[in-house]
Length: 326
Figure: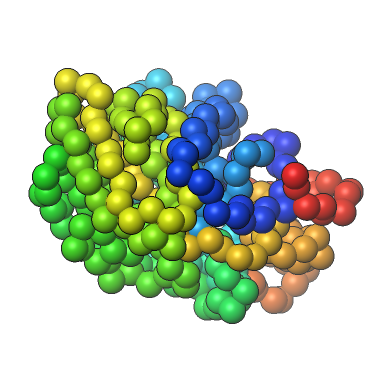
């Protein structure tokens, strides 16, 4: 998914230090994607309080939206660098196309992971069969040694594992004895967790990881702290067990993210992840050249075959040097 905010912030992000035993509650902000009939998303990462959870650097949570009212998702071709995009749906269907020639559907319970590396372009459009659109769009920052890797795409449908208190689907990393085969470039965890009504679930986790629980249906108590729908509960390294408790008479659902502290500063602007102003500016210039009058023969991002319509031009980069935040 593209970041379609008209005023795109320039962020220099740094991984946080180890947290104590408390759970930090992060509230999402509403962000409209697009024009008058904008689809709204709830963004929990990045924000002023916290920029990264492991290498996870961006989290949008949307729906359930009636596409007859919102118009659904229609994100024309746009570029990415230095990251992996993770698409995860609860309901609906999205058609993905990219400049590698990939044409794949995003469906509930199935992972679409796109590695941007040194540059890729893609589009995302909800299909005509979609009535209710509901899911998450997540980004993973690539570490220094991998951020210029070749672009790639992977599709994976994880199994649903029944455990005490509910069900778990692991789409990245390892949890509850399940391991995803999908390649990541830093230690990561990504899983959908469904809790039975009023149930408690205990999960063994990597003590070196930071974790973030984004609640989709709740409320859910995470290690003793109540997390409401669309909030994120952050937990620092040092825990070997997470206790989740459904505080409702209905099923609860959350997405659990985790990863080793990233250990690097990153700069995020629009759809680019880099390390400094010059890199971001160069990526922007290249994208504008590729979608402009054909003044360049170089193709860092490439065209998206099969998409009918024009690409998204990049916003104007603020005329300010990037400075560390906080």
